[in-house]
Length: 451
Image 1 (cartoon, helix red, strand yellow):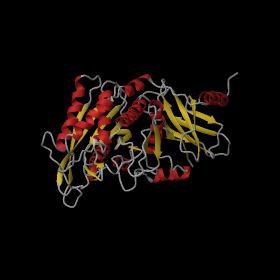
Image 2: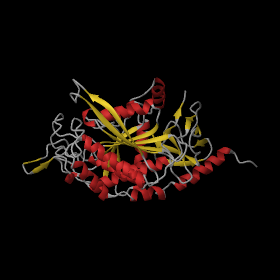
Image 3: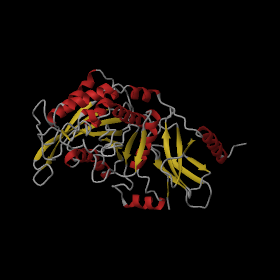
């Protein structure tokens, strides 16, 4: 006798609930090895080299080989190009020059600035792109002073050093998808480099599935309150997308999905994968696009409709950020290397590495994920389509959480393209992920009900 499909579904669910009744961390050996290859000594060396350039102000010298933003640009370019000598995944290093500033702008005059992008090409015909960001410009207290010592050890030497080390490790790993590592100028004067690169990504049709901005990831002690810990890091993500069409708005409102933007799904993904691979680091999801009164290079990408988040230290030290390097009442001010917790940068670097590798080794997201809301039922029928690019998933995870909960509570492994689960659509929120044979998950996709 043929077994009813609903019974097969129930068997799958019961098995899956048993499998996931406890949290078991299954680590992919390729990803674990890559995170373990991250070198604290390298990170510290990069930061000291950047500080030795004295300033990376956007109006500083472009021609001096040892001083100014031009020297910083050349330093990063040389580090990336040297990777081509020994790596198996040699990056293509591209310089994107753009005009910025002018009369009445924060820069005051027009200058030519440079973004540096190292592209690690995928080994398949999968055209997805994962994009990492860190800005390399720096400033001191006076935003227009381009000659004062502006070491920028943490802001943003920490992010640059992490991306340089990620690039070194990526040159020894082969991935199916394209990973672009971008070092941006112009951040301190209005996110100029990010706006330029976001525009290029949009006009050239890059299939960017995730943007992760690393800005200030090395300080572990707060000013004023003197709280200290390198056990937590923040991930900022927008709630309602900056780029939202009328159709997207109708779907969001109908499904009460204000807490489920694509950027927020990326943030949850970073938390899950990061905590799977990086010990002694808790990823705190901050349900805001950024801190009050300030911004980051992920925002121009969000405005272009690209999923983008910011990774940032949990505690900030305002005695160091954008301060003159001086001692006042016995207290050292200024963004110097001794204010950077190298072990903290290493862990945050590993957080990035684990996330991008898990994502690059996963199938693409499912398409057309829908739940049937046309009838009254205590169960929920869900259907979806396979991804249109890349390898076909081995199976899928249905994700479940209660409506008042911030994180996915349960994963149910299913095969095929339709399932009925014994959970009410009125009481729960559902998502879905594609999963590879070795367990690497795609970004989650919200399962919407349609009128």
